[in-house]
Length: 328
Image (cartoon, rainbow, N blue to C red; front, side):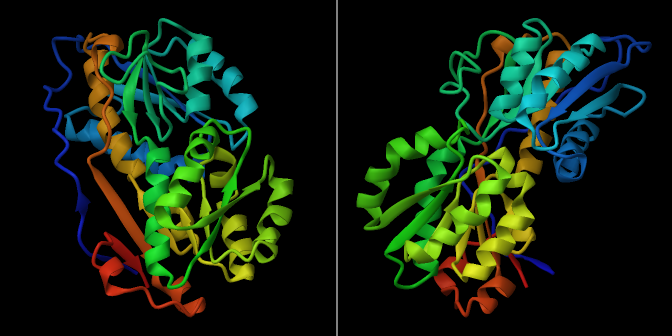
Protein backbone atom coordinates (compact mmCIF):
# COMPACT_ATOMS: atom_id res chain seq x y z
CA UNK A 1 0.00 0.00 0.00
CA UNK A 2 1.36 3.44 -0.91
CA UNK A 3 0.82 6.26 1.55
CA UNK A 4 1.23 9.80 0.25
CA UNK A 5 3.53 11.85 2.46
CA UNK A 6 4.83 15.18 1.26
CA UNK A 7 6.16 16.26 -2.11
CA UNK A 8 9.82 17.26 -2.24
CA UNK A 9 9.34 20.19 -4.56
CA UNK A 10 11.85 22.65 -5.92
CA UNK A 11 9.32 24.84 -7.69
CA UNK A 12 6.28 24.43 -9.85
CA UNK A 13 6.72 23.34 -13.43
CA UNK A 14 4.94 25.76 -15.71
CA UNK A 15 1.90 24.16 -17.28
CA UNK A 16 1.73 24.07 -21.03
CA UNK A 17 -1.64 25.50 -21.99
CA UNK A 18 -2.46 24.97 -25.61
CA UNK A 19 -5.68 24.80 -27.61
CA UNK A 20 -6.90 21.47 -28.83
CA UNK A 21 -6.20 20.28 -32.33
CA UNK A 22 -8.37 22.09 -34.81
CA UNK A 23 -7.88 24.55 -37.54
CA UNK A 24 -4.10 24.73 -37.04
CA UNK A 25 -3.68 21.16 -38.22
CA UNK A 26 -6.91 20.52 -40.03
CA UNK A 27 -9.54 18.10 -38.90
CA UNK A 28 -8.46 15.46 -41.39
CA UNK A 29 -4.92 15.19 -40.08
CA UNK A 30 -4.13 12.64 -37.38
CA UNK A 31 -0.59 13.12 -36.08
CA UNK A 32 1.52 9.95 -36.12
CA UNK A 33 3.77 9.72 -33.07
CA UNK A 34 6.51 7.10 -33.09
CA UNK A 35 7.48 5.84 -29.64
CA UNK A 36 11.00 4.41 -29.33
CA UNK A 37 11.74 2.86 -25.94
CA UNK A 38 14.86 0.99 -24.79
CA UNK A 39 12.64 -0.95 -22.36
CA UNK A 40 9.99 -3.65 -22.70
CA UNK A 41 6.34 -2.76 -23.33
CA UNK A 42 5.50 -3.79 -19.75
CA UNK A 43 8.18 -1.66 -18.12
CA UNK A 44 7.48 1.28 -20.40
CA UNK A 45 3.70 1.23 -19.87
CA UNK A 46 3.63 3.82 -17.01
CA UNK A 47 5.81 6.19 -19.05
CA UNK A 48 3.65 5.92 -22.15
CA UNK A 49 0.52 6.37 -20.04
CA UNK A 50 2.06 9.53 -18.54
CA UNK A 51 2.55 10.85 -22.08
CA UNK A 52 -1.01 9.95 -23.08
CA UNK A 53 -2.30 11.62 -19.92
CA UNK A 54 -0.38 14.77 -20.82
CA UNK A 55 -1.93 14.83 -24.27
CA UNK A 56 -5.40 14.28 -22.84
CA UNK A 57 -4.84 17.18 -20.45
CA UNK A 58 -4.11 19.33 -23.48
CA UNK A 59 -7.31 18.27 -25.21
CA UNK A 60 -5.79 15.76 -27.62
CA UNK A 61 -7.84 12.62 -28.21
CA UNK A 62 -6.14 9.40 -29.29
CA UNK A 63 -7.46 8.19 -32.63
CA UNK A 64 -8.90 11.60 -33.43
CA UNK A 65 -5.88 13.87 -33.05
CA UNK A 66 -2.99 11.40 -32.76
CA UNK A 67 -1.92 7.78 -32.93
CA UNK A 68 1.10 6.13 -31.31
CA UNK A 69 3.23 3.55 -33.11
CA UNK A 70 5.55 2.04 -30.49
CA UNK A 71 8.80 0.09 -30.76
CA UNK A 72 10.49 -1.56 -27.76
CA UNK A 73 14.14 -2.66 -27.60
CA UNK A 74 13.57 -4.86 -24.51
CA UNK A 75 16.83 -3.72 -22.94
CA UNK A 76 18.93 -4.43 -26.04
CA UNK A 77 20.42 -1.08 -27.00
CA UNK A 78 21.87 -2.51 -30.21
CA UNK A 79 18.29 -2.83 -31.54
CA UNK A 80 17.48 0.87 -31.15
CA UNK A 81 18.94 2.03 -34.49
CA UNK A 82 16.94 -0.52 -36.48
CA UNK A 83 13.75 0.29 -34.60
CA UNK A 84 14.27 4.01 -35.17
CA UNK A 85 14.70 3.37 -38.87
CA UNK A 86 11.41 1.43 -38.86
CA UNK A 87 9.63 4.47 -37.44
CA UNK A 88 11.23 6.70 -40.07
CA UNK A 89 9.94 4.38 -42.78
CA UNK A 90 6.48 4.68 -41.23
CA UNK A 91 6.74 8.44 -41.88
CA UNK A 92 5.86 9.44 -38.34
CA UNK A 93 5.39 13.14 -37.64
CA UNK A 94 7.35 13.03 -34.39
CA UNK A 95 9.41 10.54 -32.38
CA UNK A 96 9.06 10.25 -28.60
CA UNK A 97 12.30 8.70 -27.41
CA UNK A 98 13.72 7.68 -24.04
CA UNK A 99 17.39 7.28 -23.01
CA UNK A 100 20.59 8.75 -24.40
CA UNK A 101 21.17 5.67 -26.54
CA UNK A 102 17.65 5.89 -27.94
CA UNK A 103 17.94 9.55 -28.90
CA UNK A 104 21.30 8.92 -30.57
CA UNK A 105 19.64 6.16 -32.59
CA UNK A 106 16.78 8.46 -33.53
CA UNK A 107 19.16 11.21 -34.64
CA UNK A 108 21.16 8.73 -36.71
CA UNK A 109 17.97 7.53 -38.40
CA UNK A 110 16.68 11.02 -39.23
CA UNK A 111 17.90 14.59 -38.89
CA UNK A 112 14.55 16.03 -39.98
CA UNK A 113 11.85 14.19 -38.02
CA UNK A 114 11.49 16.07 -34.70
CA UNK A 115 12.32 14.19 -31.52
CA UNK A 116 10.73 14.82 -28.11
CA UNK A 117 13.11 13.16 -25.68
CA UNK A 118 12.83 12.07 -22.07
CA UNK A 119 16.22 11.16 -20.64
CA UNK A 120 17.88 11.01 -17.24
CA UNK A 121 21.33 11.65 -18.70
CA UNK A 122 23.00 14.93 -19.60
CA UNK A 123 21.89 15.63 -23.19
CA UNK A 124 24.79 18.03 -23.77
CA UNK A 125 27.48 15.61 -22.61
CA UNK A 126 25.70 12.85 -24.49
CA UNK A 127 25.95 14.93 -27.69
CA UNK A 128 22.20 14.99 -28.15
CA UNK A 129 21.88 18.79 -28.20
CA UNK A 130 24.12 21.84 -28.37
CA UNK A 131 22.85 23.29 -25.08
CA UNK A 132 19.83 23.13 -22.79
CA UNK A 133 18.77 26.67 -23.65
CA UNK A 134 19.35 26.34 -27.40
CA UNK A 135 19.15 22.67 -28.37
CA UNK A 136 19.62 23.15 -32.10
CA UNK A 137 18.89 20.32 -34.52
CA UNK A 138 15.76 18.18 -34.26
CA UNK A 139 15.85 17.25 -30.56
CA UNK A 140 14.33 18.83 -27.44
CA UNK A 141 12.40 17.67 -24.40
CA UNK A 142 12.90 16.85 -20.74
CA UNK A 143 15.99 15.67 -18.87
CA UNK A 144 16.42 14.71 -15.22
CA UNK A 145 20.23 15.05 -15.21
CA UNK A 146 20.16 12.03 -12.90
CA UNK A 147 23.92 11.88 -12.48
CA UNK A 148 23.94 15.11 -10.48
CA UNK A 149 21.62 13.43 -7.95
CA UNK A 150 23.96 10.55 -7.13
CA UNK A 151 25.67 12.47 -4.33
CA UNK A 152 22.26 13.20 -2.79
CA UNK A 153 21.29 9.52 -3.06
CA UNK A 154 24.43 8.52 -1.18
CA UNK A 155 23.80 11.22 1.42
CA UNK A 156 20.26 9.91 1.97
CA UNK A 157 21.29 6.28 2.34
CA UNK A 158 24.03 7.32 4.76
CA UNK A 159 21.47 9.21 6.82
CA UNK A 160 18.94 6.37 6.64
CA UNK A 161 21.38 3.62 7.63
CA UNK A 162 23.38 4.45 10.74
CA UNK A 163 27.11 3.81 10.69
CA UNK A 164 27.62 3.48 6.94
CA UNK A 165 31.22 4.23 6.02
CA UNK A 166 31.81 2.06 2.96
CA UNK A 167 29.49 2.19 -0.07
CA UNK A 168 29.59 0.18 -3.29
CA UNK A 169 28.27 1.58 -6.58
CA UNK A 170 26.98 -0.78 -9.27
CA UNK A 171 27.88 0.54 -12.72
CA UNK A 172 27.74 -0.52 -16.34
CA UNK A 173 31.05 0.65 -17.89
CA UNK A 174 29.46 0.84 -21.35
CA UNK A 175 26.62 3.09 -20.18
CA UNK A 176 26.74 6.82 -20.98
CA UNK A 177 25.52 7.47 -17.42
CA UNK A 178 28.64 5.96 -15.78
CA UNK A 179 31.47 8.31 -16.82
CA UNK A 180 29.99 11.43 -15.15
CA UNK A 181 29.78 9.60 -11.82
CA UNK A 182 33.32 8.26 -12.07
CA UNK A 183 34.61 11.81 -12.61
CA UNK A 184 32.86 12.97 -9.44
CA UNK A 185 33.55 9.86 -7.36
CA UNK A 186 36.47 11.18 -5.32
CA UNK A 187 34.84 14.55 -4.65
CA UNK A 188 31.63 12.84 -3.48
CA UNK A 189 33.59 10.49 -1.25
CA UNK A 190 35.43 13.38 0.41
CA UNK A 191 32.30 15.47 0.88
CA UNK A 192 30.35 12.63 2.51
CA UNK A 193 33.21 10.97 4.35
CA UNK A 194 32.65 7.68 2.52
CA UNK A 195 34.85 5.03 0.99
CA UNK A 196 33.34 4.30 -2.45
CA UNK A 197 33.98 1.06 -4.34
CA UNK A 198 32.91 0.61 -7.96
CA UNK A 199 31.36 -2.69 -9.08
CA UNK A 200 30.99 -3.39 -12.80
CA UNK A 201 28.42 -5.35 -14.81
CA UNK A 202 28.36 -4.88 -18.57
CA UNK A 203 25.73 -7.56 -19.25
CA UNK A 204 23.15 -9.51 -17.23
CA UNK A 205 25.52 -12.46 -16.81
CA UNK A 206 27.91 -10.24 -14.81
CA UNK A 207 25.36 -9.22 -12.16
CA UNK A 208 25.72 -12.23 -9.85
CA UNK A 209 29.49 -11.84 -9.52
CA UNK A 210 29.35 -8.04 -9.19
CA UNK A 211 26.71 -8.02 -6.44
CA UNK A 212 28.37 -10.93 -4.64
CA UNK A 213 31.38 -8.60 -4.19
CA UNK A 214 29.41 -6.53 -1.67
CA UNK A 215 30.50 -8.88 1.11
CA UNK A 216 34.15 -8.89 0.11
CA UNK A 217 34.14 -5.11 -0.08
CA UNK A 218 32.47 -4.89 3.36
CA UNK A 219 30.00 -2.42 1.87
CA UNK A 220 27.45 -0.96 4.26
CA UNK A 221 25.22 0.26 1.43
CA UNK A 222 24.83 0.11 -2.35
CA UNK A 223 24.00 2.70 -5.00
CA UNK A 224 22.76 1.35 -8.32
CA UNK A 225 23.43 3.84 -11.11
CA UNK A 226 20.93 4.53 -13.85
CA UNK A 227 21.27 2.13 -16.78
CA UNK A 228 18.88 0.58 -19.29
CA UNK A 229 20.19 -2.94 -18.67
CA UNK A 230 19.83 -2.51 -14.91
CA UNK A 231 16.21 -1.36 -15.29
CA UNK A 232 15.33 -4.37 -17.40
CA UNK A 233 17.04 -6.61 -14.82
CA UNK A 234 15.60 -4.76 -11.80
CA UNK A 235 13.79 -7.71 -10.23
CA UNK A 236 16.88 -9.87 -10.44
CA UNK A 237 19.09 -7.11 -9.06
CA UNK A 238 16.73 -6.53 -6.13
CA UNK A 239 16.66 -10.27 -5.38
CA UNK A 240 20.45 -10.56 -5.52
CA UNK A 241 20.90 -7.50 -3.30
CA UNK A 242 18.35 -8.87 -0.81
CA UNK A 243 20.45 -12.00 -0.37
CA UNK A 244 23.43 -9.86 0.67
CA UNK A 245 21.27 -7.95 3.20
CA UNK A 246 22.91 -4.69 2.07
CA UNK A 247 20.58 -1.64 1.92
CA UNK A 248 20.45 -0.06 -1.51
CA UNK A 249 19.35 3.22 -3.07
CA UNK A 250 18.32 3.41 -6.71
CA UNK A 251 17.89 6.00 -9.47
CA UNK A 252 14.56 4.56 -10.69
CA UNK A 253 11.37 4.11 -8.73
CA UNK A 254 10.69 0.73 -10.37
CA UNK A 255 13.41 -0.85 -8.19
CA UNK A 256 11.63 0.12 -4.98
CA UNK A 257 8.33 -1.14 -6.34
CA UNK A 258 10.14 -4.44 -7.00
CA UNK A 259 11.33 -4.58 -3.39
CA UNK A 260 14.37 -2.29 -3.26
CA UNK A 261 14.86 -0.02 -0.24
CA UNK A 262 15.04 3.57 -1.51
CA UNK A 263 14.59 5.69 -4.62
CA UNK A 264 15.39 9.36 -5.04
CA UNK A 265 14.91 11.24 -8.27
CA UNK A 266 12.40 12.54 -10.78
CA UNK A 267 9.22 10.67 -11.66
CA UNK A 268 9.58 9.37 -15.21
CA UNK A 269 5.80 9.26 -15.61
CA UNK A 270 5.65 12.97 -14.75
CA UNK A 271 8.48 13.70 -17.17
CA UNK A 272 6.60 11.96 -19.96
CA UNK A 273 3.50 13.95 -19.03
CA UNK A 274 5.54 17.12 -19.50
CA UNK A 275 6.95 15.82 -22.79
CA UNK A 276 3.40 15.88 -24.17
CA UNK A 277 3.57 19.67 -24.10
CA UNK A 278 6.64 19.56 -26.31
CA UNK A 279 4.95 17.13 -28.68
CA UNK A 280 1.93 19.39 -29.09
CA UNK A 281 4.01 22.49 -29.72
CA UNK A 282 6.15 20.69 -32.28
CA UNK A 283 3.16 19.15 -34.05
CA UNK A 284 1.64 22.64 -34.25
CA UNK A 285 4.72 23.91 -36.05
CA UNK A 286 7.31 25.02 -33.48
CA UNK A 287 10.84 23.86 -34.30
CA UNK A 288 12.56 21.68 -31.65
CA UNK A 289 15.62 23.92 -31.91
CA UNK A 290 13.51 26.81 -30.54
CA UNK A 291 12.25 24.92 -27.47
CA UNK A 292 14.64 24.99 -24.46
CA UNK A 293 15.06 21.71 -22.63
CA UNK A 294 13.42 21.55 -19.20
CA UNK A 295 14.44 19.81 -16.00
CA UNK A 296 11.95 18.49 -13.43
CA UNK A 297 11.34 20.79 -10.49
CA UNK A 298 9.94 18.07 -8.24
CA UNK A 299 12.02 15.17 -6.95
CA UNK A 300 10.65 12.15 -5.12
CA UNK A 301 11.96 10.13 -2.21
CA UNK A 302 10.28 6.71 -2.01
CA UNK A 303 11.03 4.22 0.77
CA UNK A 304 10.02 0.57 1.04
CA UNK A 305 9.38 0.02 4.75
CA UNK A 306 8.74 -3.69 4.23
CA UNK A 307 12.29 -4.02 2.91
CA UNK A 308 13.64 -1.86 5.74
CA UNK A 309 11.95 -4.20 8.24
CA UNK A 310 13.44 -7.26 6.53
CA UNK A 311 16.88 -5.64 6.79
CA UNK A 312 16.15 -4.69 10.43
CA UNK A 313 16.66 -1.03 9.62
CA UNK A 314 14.70 1.73 11.32
CA UNK A 315 14.46 4.66 8.95
CA UNK A 316 14.84 7.92 10.92
CA UNK A 317 11.85 10.26 11.03
CA UNK A 318 14.03 12.97 9.52
CA UNK A 319 14.22 10.86 6.36
CA UNK A 320 10.64 9.58 6.41
CA UNK A 321 9.25 13.11 6.62
CA UNK A 322 10.98 13.95 3.34
CA UNK A 323 9.46 11.00 1.50
CA UNK A 324 6.72 11.36 -1.09
CA UNK A 325 5.59 7.77 -0.61
CA UNK A 326 6.37 4.90 1.68
CA UNK A 327 5.58 1.35 0.63
CA UNK A 328 4.41 -0.77 3.55
